[in-house]
Length: 324
Image (spheres, rainbow, N blue to C red):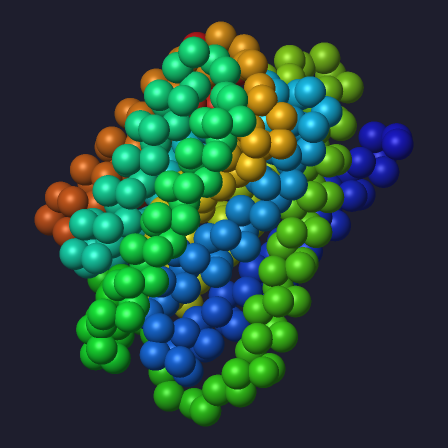
């Protein structure tokens, strides 16, 4: 494929991501309202797992092809990008308050899974048994969310989401569950297809320039597979759907470690580049900072959002210089 064709495919992928994200956010938020489930729960599950589909596709494909560096670097780099750049941009667009549910269950789950992932990869190897353990932990997390939904009544669920500081959102109109379900699925399909097209073209361009597989996975592929999360969270934040915007980031990070890394390791055990140690250190630090910002005053401000973006971009620069 020529460079021109790769660039055209990249542009098509970006367009598909944008329109797909709009439909995905619209469908998910309206369905959540219609059935009494909080936008936060929808963001943590349906939207987060849906926008992580490119990570699953890329990491599993890379593992099957013996490209363990690309597979693992994609997971680690995506999580740094999600927490640094994406959550930071969300806070810049619409500073938000943090609920107890997000802190006690989901932020703690995120930092816990990050530490588990660091332990699994500490020897630069991910075995099938470790992959199976990660998938079992993902099942436990989903079970905890399910129990929380079952225990809560309608009013509790309604307040489980996040609130934009400037205030946002509207409600009210009658929702067609069938139509919104089709909109959500169509948006998800576009997001997945767009992410795959973008990653394929961006990776081809990068590798043609002689960049190492780990660096490609940690930067180009990671950012590419995180674009669905970026576009979806930005669209949701601009519309005041803060539960979907923030829940998408946190849920995606949990799913990337437990689900994506878990499936990739079960499919084919991987041994990776020594650079994984530095990248994991970055991820643990970024996760700790992000969790601390969520816990501080139960609010993420624009200034804190800018700091998160700077940290995320710092990881890219450090990776390019061989420091991350």
